[in-house]
Image 1 (spheres, one colour):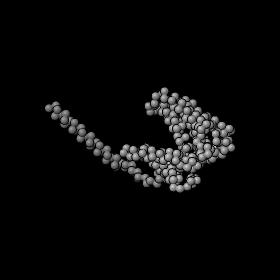
Image 2 (image 1 turned 30 degrees about the vertical axis):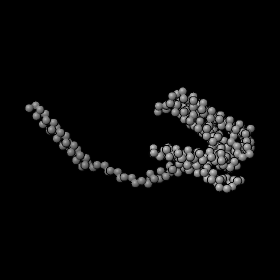
Image 3 (image 1 turned 120 degrees about the vertical axis):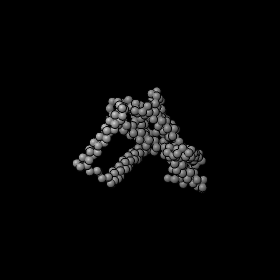
Image 4 (image 1 turned 180 degrees about the vertical axis):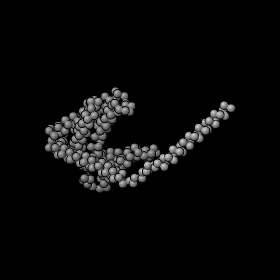
Length: 283
């Protein structure tokens, strides 16, 4: 789906290469260096992320208006703000809850809750009023795919978290009420997309996007499950293959008797030493 371009020429190929180089190489490697590299390499990681983001912005501004890369960059820019807001808000909710480690101040919990709802409302406003558009003013197809997949993933994660918290008993009911708006809001937005549609996303098109996103999510879950199972299987096989060190045979009666005699001899020496020291002190 790389852009072939109506204008052709080297400029379009340059922006296409720059976009994918930034998306697949610069930004991931920069994030990796920023998070895991030594201190002197962190600055290079930050620089790589900034340069990658700059390439994506330039692709949005200077790239071909009908290219697939421009639609992807527009979707990234549109979803970046609400995604960061919701992610930070969920972290606030997590670290202001009761936990063994020292939690954050309790008033920040309300800030996290409001930020989570605001991020979801931000996405709803984009879907209803100002979604990213491609050439000719048409709503970006990449945006509609992302929107449906995001809502479905949010709904699945929210319901899974609620079921997990329910299994932990009444002590976690407060956490359930905190995250309940996420699956409820995502479910209502999905229902609106499938019945009434969003701007540029008719209900019949949304149904197809929903089916694609469901299959993709199912495939992701199955793939992760298989990967974890295979990883555990490899660990199990490697543990079984390790040669066990020979265990020491129990001591025989003669060896036990020898040890007792040595211990008794040591005790006698200590007693003689104590008596000698005591006699010298009395004299």
